[in-house]
Image 1 (cartoon, rainbow, N blue to C red):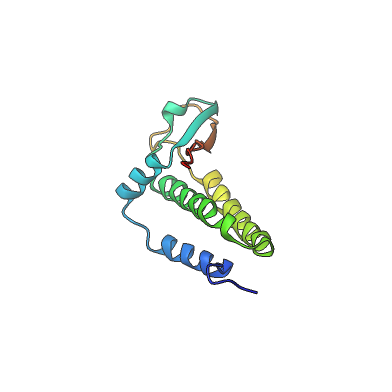
Image 2: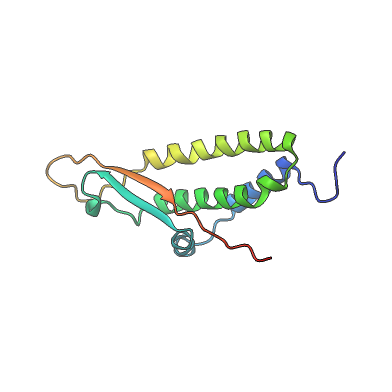
Length: 133
Protein backbone atom coordinates (compact mmCIF):
# COMPACT_ATOMS: atom_id res chain seq x y z
CA UNK A 1 0.00 0.00 0.00
CA UNK A 2 1.39 3.35 -1.03
CA UNK A 3 1.45 6.04 1.63
CA UNK A 4 0.97 9.71 0.87
CA UNK A 5 4.65 10.60 1.35
CA UNK A 6 5.97 7.63 -0.67
CA UNK A 7 7.88 8.63 -3.77
CA UNK A 8 7.75 7.00 -7.16
CA UNK A 9 11.20 5.95 -8.39
CA UNK A 10 10.38 6.76 -11.99
CA UNK A 11 9.15 10.23 -11.02
CA UNK A 12 12.37 10.88 -9.10
CA UNK A 13 14.50 9.95 -12.11
CA UNK A 14 12.16 11.80 -14.47
CA UNK A 15 12.67 14.93 -12.38
CA UNK A 16 16.43 14.30 -12.45
CA UNK A 17 16.35 14.02 -16.26
CA UNK A 18 14.60 17.42 -16.37
CA UNK A 19 17.42 18.89 -14.27
CA UNK A 20 19.98 17.43 -16.69
CA UNK A 21 18.16 18.88 -19.70
CA UNK A 22 17.89 22.34 -18.11
CA UNK A 23 21.49 22.77 -16.98
CA UNK A 24 22.56 26.20 -15.78
CA UNK A 25 25.42 28.14 -17.38
CA UNK A 26 28.89 26.61 -17.29
CA UNK A 27 29.90 29.31 -14.79
CA UNK A 28 27.06 28.31 -12.45
CA UNK A 29 27.90 24.61 -12.87
CA UNK A 30 31.54 25.36 -12.06
CA UNK A 31 30.46 27.22 -8.92
CA UNK A 32 28.14 24.32 -7.97
CA UNK A 33 30.92 21.76 -8.50
CA UNK A 34 33.17 23.71 -6.15
CA UNK A 35 30.40 23.70 -3.53
CA UNK A 36 29.92 19.93 -4.00
CA UNK A 37 33.41 19.40 -2.53
CA UNK A 38 34.82 17.11 -5.20
CA UNK A 39 38.47 16.25 -4.66
CA UNK A 40 40.85 15.35 -7.48
CA UNK A 41 43.91 13.36 -6.49
CA UNK A 42 46.63 12.61 -9.04
CA UNK A 43 47.53 8.92 -9.25
CA UNK A 44 50.06 9.23 -12.09
CA UNK A 45 51.21 11.96 -14.44
CA UNK A 46 51.56 15.71 -13.96
CA UNK A 47 48.07 16.99 -13.10
CA UNK A 48 49.20 20.60 -13.54
CA UNK A 49 49.23 20.00 -17.31
CA UNK A 50 45.53 19.10 -17.40
CA UNK A 51 42.73 21.41 -18.52
CA UNK A 52 40.38 21.16 -15.54
CA UNK A 53 38.20 23.91 -16.99
CA UNK A 54 37.06 21.62 -19.81
CA UNK A 55 33.33 22.25 -20.32
CA UNK A 56 32.45 18.57 -20.71
CA UNK A 57 34.44 17.74 -17.57
CA UNK A 58 32.58 20.38 -15.54
CA UNK A 59 29.18 19.28 -16.93
CA UNK A 60 29.86 15.63 -16.11
CA UNK A 61 31.09 16.38 -12.58
CA UNK A 62 28.05 18.61 -12.05
CA UNK A 63 25.74 15.81 -13.23
CA UNK A 64 27.46 13.31 -10.91
CA UNK A 65 27.09 15.74 -8.03
CA UNK A 66 23.39 16.24 -8.75
CA UNK A 67 22.92 12.47 -9.00
CA UNK A 68 24.59 12.08 -5.61
CA UNK A 69 22.32 14.78 -4.14
CA UNK A 70 19.24 12.92 -5.41
CA UNK A 71 20.53 9.66 -3.93
CA UNK A 72 21.27 11.24 -0.54
CA UNK A 73 17.89 13.00 -0.46
CA UNK A 74 15.59 10.26 -1.76
CA UNK A 75 17.00 6.79 -1.06
CA UNK A 76 16.01 6.52 2.60
CA UNK A 77 12.51 7.82 1.86
CA UNK A 78 11.73 4.87 -0.40
CA UNK A 79 10.14 1.58 0.58
CA UNK A 80 12.62 -1.35 0.61
CA UNK A 81 11.22 -2.81 -2.63
CA UNK A 82 11.60 0.60 -4.33
CA UNK A 83 15.13 1.04 -3.00
CA UNK A 84 16.38 -1.90 -5.09
CA UNK A 85 14.93 -0.41 -8.30
CA UNK A 86 16.19 3.04 -7.35
CA UNK A 87 19.69 1.69 -6.71
CA UNK A 88 19.79 -0.12 -10.07
CA UNK A 89 18.71 3.04 -11.94
CA UNK A 90 21.16 5.11 -9.90
CA UNK A 91 24.01 2.69 -10.64
CA UNK A 92 23.25 2.73 -14.38
CA UNK A 93 23.39 6.53 -14.47
CA UNK A 94 26.49 6.59 -12.27
CA UNK A 95 28.27 4.18 -14.64
CA UNK A 96 27.24 6.34 -17.62
CA UNK A 97 28.76 9.44 -16.03
CA UNK A 98 31.90 7.51 -15.02
CA UNK A 99 32.31 6.42 -18.63
CA UNK A 100 31.90 10.02 -19.78
CA UNK A 101 34.61 11.14 -17.34
CA UNK A 102 36.95 8.43 -18.61
CA UNK A 103 36.54 9.55 -22.22
CA UNK A 104 37.06 13.30 -21.70
CA UNK A 105 40.31 14.63 -23.11
CA UNK A 106 41.77 16.89 -20.43
CA UNK A 107 45.04 17.47 -22.23
CA UNK A 108 45.73 21.10 -23.15
CA UNK A 109 45.34 22.23 -26.76
CA UNK A 110 49.09 22.64 -27.19
CA UNK A 111 50.38 19.16 -26.34
CA UNK A 112 53.73 18.61 -24.67
CA UNK A 113 56.36 17.07 -26.95
CA UNK A 114 56.14 13.60 -25.46
CA UNK A 115 52.90 11.80 -24.77
CA UNK A 116 51.69 12.02 -21.19
CA UNK A 117 49.53 9.49 -19.42
CA UNK A 118 47.38 10.82 -16.62
CA UNK A 119 45.40 9.02 -14.01
CA UNK A 120 43.38 10.86 -11.40
CA UNK A 121 41.02 9.78 -8.67
CA UNK A 122 37.91 11.92 -8.22
CA UNK A 123 35.91 11.58 -5.05
CA UNK A 124 33.46 13.61 -3.10
CA UNK A 125 34.31 14.73 0.37
CA UNK A 126 31.75 13.32 2.77
CA UNK A 127 29.81 15.93 4.65
CA UNK A 128 29.44 15.32 8.33
CA UNK A 129 26.18 16.79 9.45
CA UNK A 130 25.48 17.02 13.12
CA UNK A 131 22.00 16.04 14.11
CA UNK A 132 20.36 18.29 16.64
CA UNK A 133 17.97 16.76 19.13
